[in-house]
Image: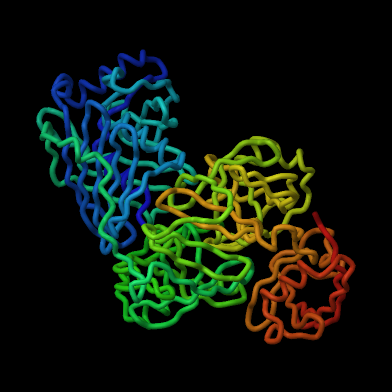
Length: 616
């Protein structure tokens, strides 16, 4: 629940350096002045740093601790915010993280890896000691703000990404650091410089992504230099003792699921109560709705930032759940986000009381049988695969499995996402880099999905071949994202593979071995179709509200416009024909099918006929 931005705040609290290149000064002279201004030769003797801080963000207060080897850039950060605890470290080669339940994993995603290289560069003070970590250093010009002048220096560490340091032209101390991460730009402001052991340290910092209410405030309580640090401090901790069981001493349990809108819904018990209908998402956090949290008597805290495929941020509180149970499988002491899912329920046409995913998949080997609509959870030590499926290795992009693949011979990294209803969503930066709009002649623009933050828009087309490792899928419906904010603006991933592709297989997810096993099922040869009516509908006040209409599509030709309300489809009201069932009909009925709809525009009601046809 606490992302790298908080750890960035802790690490940047000791960023005392990096000035380079003024517009009219030699970079080395600026570096020398910056070093002199913040302590000069006193820095030469510093070999390690131990920092203790107080921190707050999103209504949560807590503490943090950082240990750094300034000679190599190795580090370990630990934090506690309300019910959330965690850690992240870098041992010189591997970046790792540990969550609130002590689960650990290697952070393989490009966003995390590049950020870690920058962290290591800064923590090794390599701007003054370039032999510790090479970098490209250049001037980014001068800035003036509120009557103050700054030199801006751009640094690109080896193995990292560019970041800017703003240097106060009057004091040569650092005012801020700016780094563009995968889906946001983070700025860390420094203030309240104090002298410790002959060097000046900013005892206060504020990290922001432009959303002020989610700012992270870090205040240093104590700084110590040259405190001995054991080598083991930087290494990834061993796995924790199992906090999961399967009833009756069994090693496996199978539970049914509903596949609605290509989303997996399972029945879950929390603290012995339920069952509650919840979405199941391979990389998703634990979530309960505020209504369910109240029903269970859970204490909620904070208002952290939540993001998804949509462009809006949402407030997310947190709580603690003593027991999560799926079938006979139980996981103890879980942190849950508390988040309203009403808008998602309107888009789904079915209410869910929460979400589970990564924390369950991390502990069990999970087989998703799309053919029989069953999940099988197995204790990892008891799992032995005997089938003939195709093994595809993956790395973690945050908490999402990510595989090496191709789209029509263009190599990229693809997230595997059971929480997506789509087949293949190509992220905006990747689509733009390879000019996929022109390559595919994509002209059909539509709302293509809905999630945290609202609607997602894209250009809908069709690729020839998608490869995931050695698994191939032909002619997938492909969406070229048009999002300007949110998860689909990540420049480090090519695309997101959803259930439109995944349901062609039964898939074993083995997070411990970081591999998936794909078994083709009866869905493998079925054609992949896109909505043949050309409109997106949500459920609203018992009717279908038209949110989006594709220009020149069947619905548009029938005179249907955004804001219209569909009162019935072929004589069946939304109470008789659910939104998921209506979507299946409009997507799966053959081209040429005439669909009668009763449409309400303002106070006027009329009949219209939509003639279905393929749009891609």
